Length: 316
Ligand code: AKB
Image 1 (cartoon, rainbow, N blue to C red):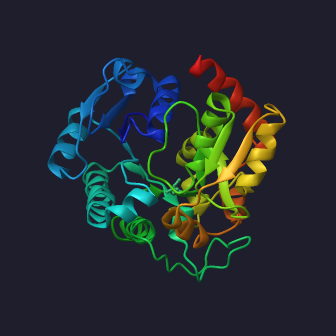
Image 2 (image 1 turned 90 degrees about the vertical axis):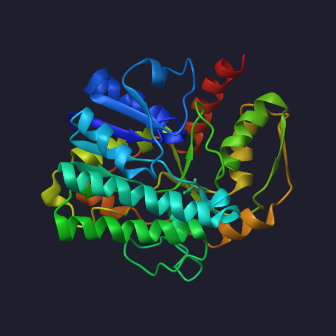
Image 3 (image 1 turned 30 degrees about the vertical axis):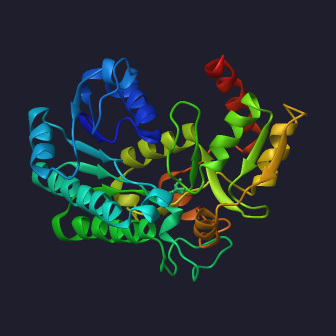
């Protein structure tokens, strides 16, 4: 990667990935785009930025040509709970945006990354140690767009030779930018509430296991996969990756080690609970480890220590 176009640069992944890429590849070599502009935001201030609606394929192509990009990292998408509330919009943004981004990559011969998700699995998928290659019959609009996206990226590689790559992200936990509209967001909210109110009502019920990952491991995964030797990749577009699997009570217990007075209760949201119930408890990421050396650093304990330390500074 030398000149990179990022879509959705102000989202949970984009806001941190853009800064990491600029530190690695140079500020001018990472073109950040988003549908909105946030004055004073470091992503907008530190390098090239363009307003872009990913449904406008022509505008995307023009920006890519203007900066002569050789890589596209397409992040703009709606997350699972919002997608369930607005399925038509989710289809249009998640599929239309991806199609436009793939077309730009094809036309300009760019390498390409876009994330899939554990949401690409469904209730008939094996729940524990979910294999890399398995049944994918999701029953959410988010899941439908994620499976379709995986297939579309495979198609662009096989049919047009576009160097498409991707991972199935678990829930991502970060302190800089809130995720907004996901099923796994409780695992971010809980840290804020623990520090602010010493209590949290979880919208996901006790005993509901989902895969999770701290954002530094997710960012490393993107860069390492993009820099990996393409000849060693057998799966390319939908690598299972995970760093930990836990239920709400486990993260609460870990937070209590730092904030003994913290209390968690439950106020389960039936829609997000149903989505969580249809996802795996834990996925098998051995293909990513074997094919490109995926190796996350953070577990629940080290992530909790770091999250609380960083958030304390941010909230003060
Ligand atoms: C969501 O909860 O929608 C996302 C995801 C796991 O894809 N965090």
